[in-house]
Image 1 (cartoon, rainbow, N blue to C red):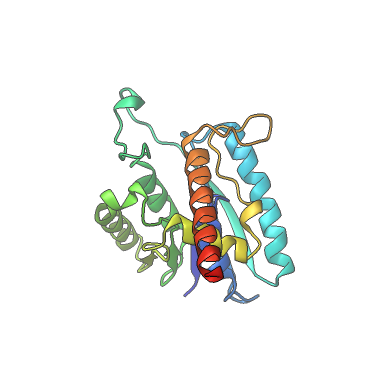
Image 2 (cartoon, rainbow, N blue to C red):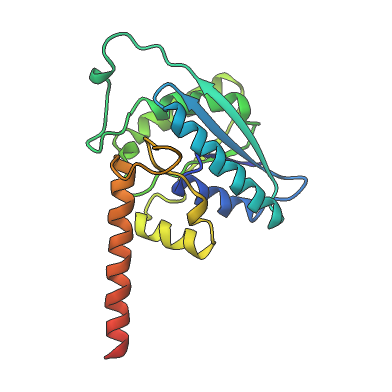
Length: 213
């Protein structure tokens, strides 16, 4: 029985990987799976790769054992992609179904697959469908694996705070449309991150003010 993590190099999945890697060993490493798919721009993939490389170096120095694999997902969908299923936040609801089915081949019987979806993610709109699909695929392969969602009730603020505590926040990459190797500051992940960091600063100021009273 082992642990596997869907890992993009972004803040959510990196926190999940770090949490599991703390319990890893030479004989029981954590399997980190990264997915290259058609909705992922090449520039973002390059930056995610750079982030993952730096993070893997940090994990190694900390004595964590992580085996990293990359799989490429090619989904063939007829019709206009604009008519695909999206959440209210603009997230593709096709992605989890692709990923979960492709992962089954990498898992051993009894493995646990950890996903970094948090409280505000669109994943929860169809989460039971994804779980059922994954379990059916496992059954067809003669495996019994589990899905775990350690950040299910976590807010983005809590995730960022924990990453900073672990000194991993500045190594993660989230921007969808990098410009010359830097965040564009305009895409939805960049906007979300800016808002979250602003909320954290306001919370810290309030706590500091209350401490002085």
